[in-house]
Structures are given as structure tokens and as C-alpha cells.
Image (cartoon, rainbow, N blue to C red; front, side):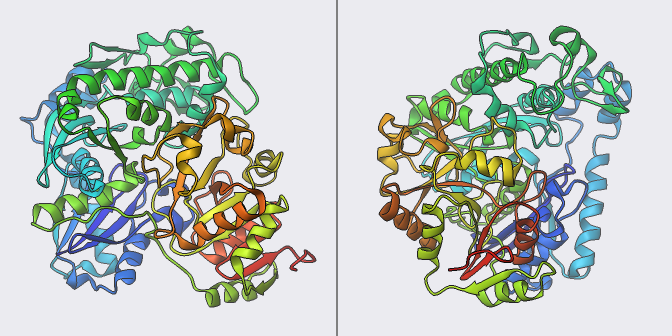
Length: 579
């Protein structure tokens, strides 16, 4: 069966994914092709075109279009809960009760119009809606590779109405145990505080998580933001997750927190340099999130975890790596799989896997996230030859050796290799890399290239040969979805990738999934004694990750990087050294 999954129904992170007989063939985010971060308000036309081209499949060969947004009937408790909790905004409450499917109808129409534009008008593929949180659940469960009974957790801002999913998977089927509905959303609460702390919701949550270790969670008690008895959750929507007239407004923009929050905590943070008291608020909301999720997991998933110790997890909140570290530390969690594209982009994969599994296909486990476009060395050479910056470039005979020499000398290096990663993490194919034992390399990348806030950590890519020694466990970690405590004897060896709290968000690299990147780690071990690289995404602040050689060259000549390697091509600024 051939299934094309689409996302973008919730107005951001449009993407496409293609499954053929249960195997992921391709997946990519629309933002990478159109160069518009999060692709807000867009449908995944270019991503879908890529997936079909990658597989050599025509629209008339596709059996089903899987769409992670579904109609919710009036008999569902979701619509009634939403209406009751939004009594103060009667337009929203009445819409939920009397026109609850209007958004689905609108989204379906937009998706069908896009599909018509790319050749599906008379293709005959079935359009199959999948509930948003079932798509998240499927993206984790069906791709985890876990057997037996598997606990499933899904937490994000919202889908149709649901915000949180507890369930289990067994024999290929997903069973729902409990759900929470908007506005009772932990993702929404964290996102509202993200806005209060001066960052953009759906983009700045990583920054809050990185800021938290600099603060003291005990300085401020934020527990009034929610009520949770372990079974139920109620967010205080007089303070956060607010709509309509309850929103705090500034310069014509409405926020998802209220003036009451400002009266309580003080003015919202502005700019990059203000620390007090905002670092403590970040620490407090991070602790509130972790403690609440662990309490809910104990209640709703504890019995399932006691049977098999396997947890599959997705949704935007699943990208909170500090929370994931605490989930992994639970004694009843033996194995934890976090979908690397846990946010809404990953629902394209989730909807596709859900439809494929429902049709009887055996969905194959996710082996890696290298699912996007690749470019040949000849294509990289052609991009260099035609780029208006007129770069200095040459073809390399030994790419790994050249890269390791640049890195060992203390230079950051832009590195474009193989197929682009699916999801928000650069995993060694669209990366800026550096030598983590070289003093000041993180600060140099931050100041000259990434222009990021000082508290955001850089992460290590680690060879599987040394990973267990560095993090003290052999738990798989291929996707940078967990933090680990760094072993004391490693902290001085790779200080540039150890965060304020002594942890690191680690990617463990194996030769079978990324042989060239693994060879580069081996080459670094030969030169520095450490098979570890600082790894951050190949992009500038506010831009999507680089996709093509042209994108890489545009980024390269828009920052202070000195070295770029694309496949077997070394590029420097004009007049630079290309030994």
C-alpha cells in the first residue's frame, strides 16, 4: 500500500511523508523548500512533490492520503468540555457546539486544493482523516520497534480539541485510555509562559528549557497556573491559555497570557539580556511541567509500564529533553522512544503509519531520520560555480581527513552531507560542527554564526564507541531527544557541550546509519582523543535548516563561517586557505 501523509492542518509545520508497504521512503518539512520557518499557513506542496519524486511514484499510484485532523462529533466530550471552559468567550463556545467541524471542513478543502495543484485531482487516492493525537500516537508507537504492550504518551498544545493522550499499543492497534481537552493543555501553558518570557510560541520553548538551569525553581511558586490531582488536569485559564478579551495585548498583538499574569509576575521580558527574575520563572515552569507529567504518567500509564516497561512518546512537549530525562529515570521505564519529529511536522508520518497499519501493512521501525533530499558532489560543484558570491572551492580527495584537520585546528565547519534530516534536530547531515575540547568554540559559533541567546546549549554528537562511557548508559539515543548527566571524567574533555546543569543532549552516531559522520568522529578521536563533536543545525537564527547546496552557500556568505564542506566540495570565502 502507498500512503502519502500530510501535515499543516493546525496552521504551522506543514510536512509530507510517504510510506510504501509500511516502509518510510521519504519525509520532509515544507519550510525547508520555501525557506519560511514553520511554514505558517502553508500546505506541504513542495514537500509532497519531493516525497513522490524521491520514490519515483506518480499521484495515480498513491492509494491513500492520510491527514492528521479529523471531524469530532457532537457526542464527543471534547466539544462540550471546550464550550464549558470557554464560557467567557461565547463566540468560541457556541462555535464548538454548533459548528465544531467547520475547521475540519476548511482544512480539508485547503488540502484537497493543494493536492489538485500537484496532480491528484483525478488520481483516485482516498482522503483519510486521522485524529490529530492518534497521529502523534502512531508516529511514536508504530515506528518505535517495540513489541508487546507499549505505553503511549502524547502531549502538545492542541489538535482538534485534545491536548494530551494516554494509551497503549498492542498487536499494531492503538487503544485510548484517557485524554485532556483544550484549554487544559500543558503544551499551551508552557507556550504561554514562553511568550511571557519574550520568545515566540511554537519556536521559543527550547529557549525556555535552556534558560531554566540558570535559575532557581524554588524562588517562585507557579503552581497556581494549574490544578492536578494525578488523574485530572485543569489549567488556570484566567492566567494562561486565554483567548478573546482575557488576552494581554501590546502594540496591537494579543498573547496567550492575561493581564492578571502580568499583575502577578511583573512585566513580560523583552530583549536578550535581561536575566532576573525571568531565569527563575523559566526554572519554575520547567519543574512544574516535569512534576505534573510524571504524576499523570504514574496514574494513567503506570499499570501498562509495569507490564513491559516500554514507553512511546510524541507531541510538541516530547521535544522537552529535560522532561524526557526524568521519564527515562522512572524505574518502570526500561525503554523510551521519542519520535524525532515529535511536533506537528511528525503527524504526517503518524497519519500515514496509522492508515497503513489499519489497512494491514506491517509498519517498519524508524531506523534513522535521514529522509529528505540529497545532492551529489556534481550538484554541489554546479551550485558553487553559479553562486553570485563567487566562492573559492575545490573538490576533495579525502573529505573526512580535510574536515577533521579543520576542526582539530579549532575552526567551526558547515557540513552538508547525504539526505536532509526530518524533524528539528540536525543529526550530522545539515550541521555546523566544532571541536568541543577547543576553548571558546561554542561562544564563537554563537557570536559569529548562530546569534543565539547565551543560555542555549550546544549538543554533542558522540560515537557509539564511547557513548556509554560518556553518559553512563547504553540506552539508544540517535535523535537528540534526551539529556543525560555527563560523566565527571568527560566534563573537562568536552566542556563546550556540557550545559550549566552538567547534562548534555546527546546524539549517538553509528556507522550503519551515518557512515561518513561516524568516520569523522573516528578521525577526531585520532587527533584529539575524543570521538565527540559539537553539533548544531546548519542555519542562522530565525531561518529554517538548510536544505540544498544553494541554501548552504547563501547561509555561508551571510555569516562569519570560514569553511563549508558539501559532499566532497570544500568552500571558503574568497582569499581563504583551501590547502
